[in-house]
Image: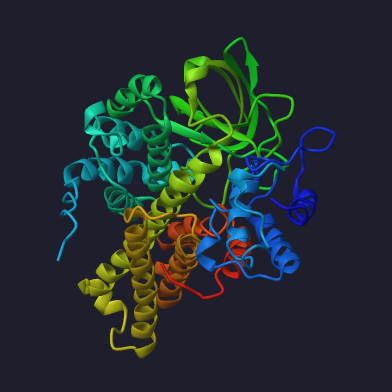
Length: 92
Length: 393
């Protein structure tokens, strides 16, 4: 997960308590307030930031479940070498 | 060429449904006038084992499918929309226990449902959350492995008659957000219940839905699904079965109304009273029938989508299920309104007409408000934006 991604994602997350969240691929987006209403706003932010368009068939609940699942779908659309690998091999 | 194994033929529920319909019709005028829960119909649902329609045979139930639920809900809706909705909502709760209950909970509760001893009510409403199903304010408290429930719900259909409750609560823990919702089951004897308020609605008067305060403690294995995983139950069971079941009930209510109108018109008295060559009358009947065929077609297609086992969170599938709910709630109401215009004051508007159009219209007026169409349109707008290619399920 690259820094542009974590930076765009952070404003969408609403933790219960004070303090910053540590973003990992396992971060549960739904628990932090990314419901189906928020997902479309997040999609626009992703597409604007990376200049990509995510395929319709990837825009299901599984993709928006965790930071890692969303990043994997983004990384697949980035030009070769532009993304830094799948979320599973990265630390945030 | 390979073919799918033939699906099990639908259950023959004719006699069971006839028994419930008979009990319903006998008390219909009274439950509507007095806004009383249809106790006789519920007793018949218990006696005929229909409360266990969706409970697997292995747990003593009828082992019915979504298709059986749709057929039964439609039949009951023809007699009384309140009874149909009470039944459909109970089945939706039972399906959540079947699919997500722990092994221990399933063993404890499913045989009781199948035996007609456990009518389930749903506690998902909460003051101040604007009907957001997937959020919760009141929080479960973990007290040494037991979960403490303290919850006020402004609307619980059948709450004063239910034997068990499925309750949405915020997950336990200091860092749980309003989006971490857990579903718990509670037996009636595990709760202190206080009903409040008066039930005097326009329609659905037998669907007694008072406000309820629930307080009690349940053991940990009565969490349904995992802690914080209610959204998964909502997406796979609650949502799809609600839209299918409710739409089937509404279609039944409008179809029952149309059928009674046609029987009246074709009777000797009706033919003497109404000019069946009137183009206005014929057009109004045709329009009403056309609306019901539209809903029926969409209901059957949505049923096939649910039966396919495909991921129902895909935008095209969610949009189709939402379209079913919105279309059924609007078109069934409009179909009955057409019939009132067709028949006029005496048989369209008066309570004592055998067409019962007056009650059908009042009852169906609740359909667009029950999980509000306004909310579904907003969700659909966002879902549509996620499907630029406009695919259809």
